[in-house]
Structures are given as C-alpha cells and as structure tokens.
Length: 475
Image 1 (cartoon, rainbow, N blue to C red):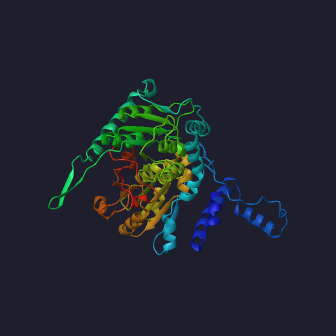
Image 2: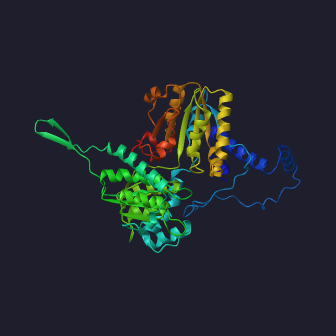
Image 3: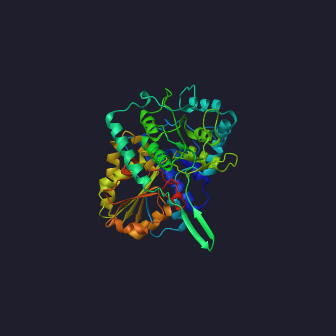
C-alpha cells in the first residue's frame, strides 16, 4: 500500500514515473514469488477489458486515507519477504543528462514526511504529559510487551543486572577507552577573552548541560555502542544528571551490556521505555522520570518526530541534538574498489532496519565491476541473520552511475549522507572536496563498522540530509 499511496500523491511527470516504476517493480516481484507470468497478467487484463468477470461497481471497498496511528508498530514487526530466492538488488540510475526534477528524486529518502509523523506522535506525547507514569507503563506493556511495576532504575545497579561474558566486557572496555580518549581531546576548558576596545573585555567559556537524556534504541538489536557514544561525551563534559532511556525486554529487564555501560558512565537513572513515549517522559518529566534539558540519540521515525515535537513546545523547555533518523550510508567507488569491501560497507547500514538506505555512487565502473559488487551484496546479505531486513532496505536503495570523482562528490554533498565511505584512488586527497557528511571513512581499510563501535569517533550523526546543518559531533 505504501508504494500505491506514494504514486497517488505524486504530482509531476517525473514523480509519477518514479513512483510507478517502484509500484511495478514490487508488483512483478510479488508475481514472481507466486509463479505468475506476464502472460497470466495479460489474460487477466484481457478479461477485465472485456468485462467478463468484473465485480459490481459497489463491490470493491472504497479507498480511504489511512488514519494516523496513535502509537508505533511494535519494533519486532517485519513484513514477510516476497521471495527469499530472488536476487537482492538495488535500483540503478545514471546521473548524466538528467533534469533537476529527476536529480531531486535521487536525493530523496524513502521515509514519510515529518509533518505526517509528528501528527502520529502527538497523541502519545499528550498522554504522557497528561497522565505521566500511568500512561508510560501502558505504552510499555502495549508495545514492548513488558508489564512493569516501575518506570525507572536508579544506582547502584546490581552486579547481576550487568552480568556479561569476559570477551564482551573486554570489548566494551576497549571501546570505552578509545571513545573517551578522542572526546576528551575535544574539551576546551580555556576562556576566550578579547578586548574589543580599550576597557571593554568580552569573554566566552563553556559549561556542561546540567541534565541530559540519552535515547538508546532497542528492538531487534542490542546497542551498547550507542550507550557509549552518547554517555561518554556527557561524562567527559561533566553533566550532573545523565538519564538513559531504552526499551525493556519482555521480562522487564534491560540488556546487561547496556547496564554495564550505564555503570561505566555513571548514569543517574535508566528509563525502561522506548519510542515517542520515552522522549515525552524525559522532555516533561513524570512522577519518577527526571525532566532533562536536552535529549540526544538516534531512533526511528517515531523517535525523531517526537524529539522535533517537544523541542518546538515552549512549555517543555527542552532542546535536542539533531533529527537523527534511520541509518544511511553512501559509498563512492572507482575502478580501484574491492567489490567485497564495497558490499560489506553497504550492508553495514542496510541491516539496521527496513527504512535504512544505502547508496553506491559508481565512478565510471564497468558493467562487470558493478555486477561483481551486486553479486557480493547478494552473497554477503544471505549470510546475515537479518537478511529479511536487508532485502527490504536494499530494494529501496540506489546505485548512481557518474562519470568523474568530482561529479560523484558533488552528488554526495547534495545528498549529505550520515556515513560517507571513499573507495577511491588517492582517497585522502579527495577529502578536501567534501562539505556535507556526518562522518567520512577514507580508503578501503577504513570500514564504517569501526566507527560504529570502537575507533573513537562518534556514531550519533545527522541523517536525512541534515549533515548540511549539523556537524558529526554531539553538541
């Protein structure tokens, strides 16, 4: 229905063609999965044209615009894959010679408009604001399937709650050390003083935000890495209150990996809730959830919309880091690119969720080279436990063919990706051309996954084109 709805809303020749192609692609995929041939479709069309088996005009249900949902679909929902044997392929476009309208379509993300999402989260935010903990517990029971007696945990946290294997503990400790080292180097404790005219001295100095709320997604993955990426900057800055918010498991517990990070960071509270309801609870406070001054952290469209909504409410007195939404990566590759490496980098974000987007910008790649990359994507994706997620996100993603590195980087700057990876000859020399990107990974031996976990840089980055307005650093 999503593809049909987007086609109905298209209002230019280019948009109609673009969305119709999407709809036809998914329709043909469905037909293939059920053994339906083009000849079968032609026979059906012929029968319809001859009115042999047409239904009565009033037999077909009337189409109506879907009503805004009052709350998000549970994170565990996953639409079934149409055909597990069909090749996992991206769409392809050639950049040269296209119009401005067509180029704009290639820059568009496959997500709902923000105003639509904000309308959907408003009822959730209003319920939390009006009924506090009671509403929070109800939403948690409904969407996380966890029947809780209380919404928050407070230190000291029990050793049992953070029980992890020695290998996992060592990995988290190493990541903590690297990330803290990189972020501590960015702290400038000096005071800027400028005498603008005799006797007039102007100063500028930094102070930590007192109370911060850090949203750590849950759902289909455990993300202690996000807890580290958000918690360490707050710890280094000297924030007095650090509130974690993360969805609980069905038994009401929080993953021990996240609990261990909360212990390392010195979190003052852990809110056992996710989605828009967690954002609202931190923005306004409840009987047990501390109100915060600024909310940080990535999330799905529901979380992003809720963050934008509360930031614009003057009664909330809360700000946000940036509108961090679904994951995305853009890879620029030339003739020197290793096909297996490129595929792995593309899949590193494609497996995050069905609304993730990956883009391969190919610089004069031969048909054979492109085919090698696509075959590697298909092969590596099938080895992943999250292949059903990858299949859907890749189907919405793009290969953009360009004729030069300059043209490729110009497209990337317009796209403003969350992650940008350069599989290019003399890649370090090209960094100076980049103006809009959340984080840049230079060369074939700089996999994006290192930045996601333990190299030291932060992985909480602007998505959906917001790298034009926001830097890759938490601020």
